[in-house]
Image 1: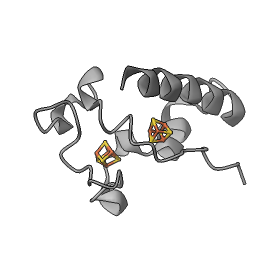
Image 2: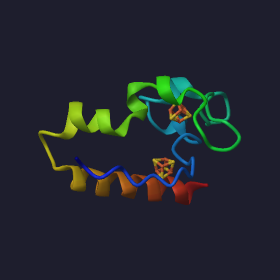
Image 3: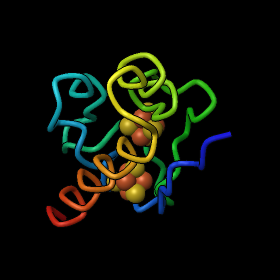
Image 4: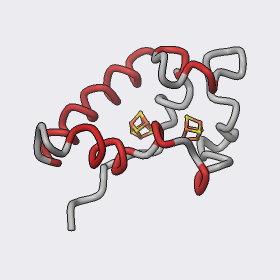
Length: 86
Ligand code: SF4
Ligand code: SF4
């Protein structure tokens, strides 16, 4: 069992969906996702898109290229970048 992705639920990724062509369609008009609640939770969490599922993205696209720990480290860098934009 792999360790869970250490998401702090800061919401910075969901507040900047405009930055990726894979998530831009979720933009409610101000750069944030239309499904982001005021408490930084996802209002459709159980039914969120595949692009929002870090475990699934790893399994489908990255598991043959790198191990989970390296994938997590790369994603944490992306989180830190996004956190520094707000
Ligand atoms: S930016 Fe990273 S830590 Fe913050 S909510 Fe998104 S995945 Fe979690
Ligand atoms: S669907 Fe949910 S998890 Fe995905 S960007 Fe929107 S609020 Fe975030």
